[in-house]
Length: 111
Length: 112
Image 1: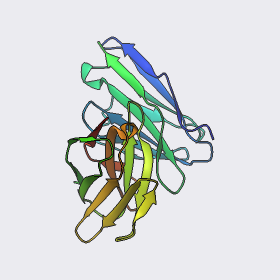
Image 2 (image 1 turned 60 degrees about the vertical axis):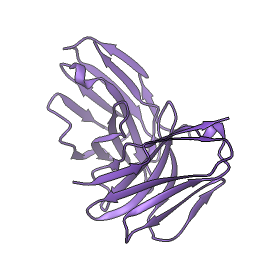
Image 3 (image 1 turned 180 degrees about the vertical axis):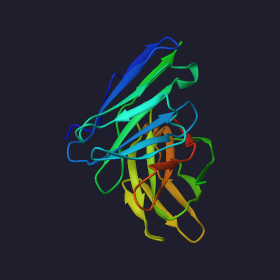
Image 4 (image 1 turned 135 degrees about the vertical axis):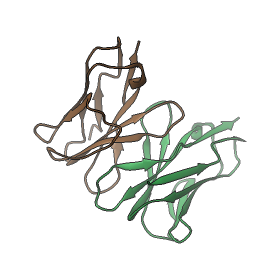
């Protein structure tokens, strides 16, 4: 069990650029979640997949954000036309029936 | 809207002290409450609580849930400098959707 992995770990981009992050969940986990965390706050839920189906999206997920999990395994989160307010840690988590296990996160800095 | 409030927001104690961290919540269709430890990386799972009054224990850490009063506590005895971290409390709704709702965390610093 290698745990949840995320790539890249850090991303610096200029305002207006598009970015894509990848998450590989624990292999037998069918549920995958994306969260965003800013300094001094707990993680905030963005979206949730059960297998390949995206079942829930937070109101935080504006139309510039899109997530996919095409084969029910890894997932990608894309942010289009990035804004400085998108700077945050993007966390991925996975679960089977029990608790969610988190990956190391991708730290996004928009300059 | 679901709400999780943790207290205190920060706490500084000396090594060997015992600490109690608090978490109160309001959630529609409560399913479980979870505690995580976050150092300078991803949250690490500690406990998942679903039933009132049943203490969960792991080494020097323990936690209990009160579903009537809508709160949970996390105790750490004989604290060590390695316990320094942000401790996050989160609640899960029934049905498994919506993900977790987190509190802001308690920033715990253990001084040698």
